[in-house]
Length: 394
Image (cartoon, rainbow, N blue to C red):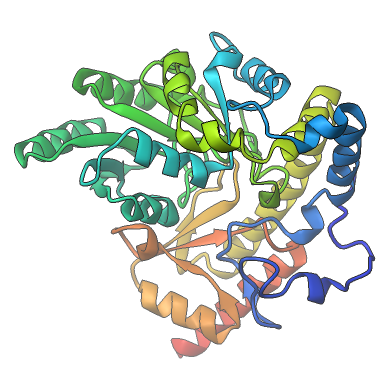
């Protein structure tokens, strides 16, 4: 299999990837290491085009109608099977992606002013979305194994003492955004125990779970809890394409019923019904898993190229732990170079990077994405950053 995002067509790449067509476009000559996108060359355009053709051929006019409120049964069954016991189709609700799922949970399961407990450093746009829904994000201390269970217990006590209602814990335990860490199974169980003791719902954002690059995967928090008290969010945005606007959530069937009864589903049916049918053909035929294997290999090559360049050029300036999967590498300053100095050097070098402070408080750091650029471009970007830092410090 090969990526088909840059194949020739009626429009040039520059005209396709421009403001007014896609969400964000970097200026010419700038290397973007901040974005959480796939390289256009990794988008499976031909695969998706064929999937839509097959879906329309198989389902005809039904593919263009309103979808079942909870989503296409065949896809829900396939996703449940991938999750494993005790999941069945009743545990699955199709969504328009993780952002839409978070919005649904924030407006359906929480009241304005309620508190969401998030990792000290967490996905900033997810937290912004929750804030826009009227919820308050409460950062909880974390270490190299993820959120601290005792800190979560203490935070719950503080919030209740203030008379504020808890909403849920928002966690990214697998290939964490922004740090790339994986929370060990023991820590996951400890966090679940604290949540259960306090009757706190856990929302597990598992956007990158299908992109392991090294080692065996940890069990999801949903799996460990038997999908009681946990809502696990999945998406095809990181593995196929965000333009599909298709994801899912897994939880107790009673919660699925409550969420699926929302007026947005009762009025308009499942979101992106045609995309759901197209993706169903990919999952059922095995094409999706073949694509995943291909994509993991490409991301692994890119991750390794970025890591090798950092080790060669910035070993005396910053440290990192090789991420076991996902899109991001977390680069931590050794203390001599501040975050402002790192980001300023990056800007002078023609790079866009994501400052660690964007995601919460902590030591000076950067989130570097390896998903959006080819290996040689990643290596060249690190060379430019190292050169800019050397010039600044001489």
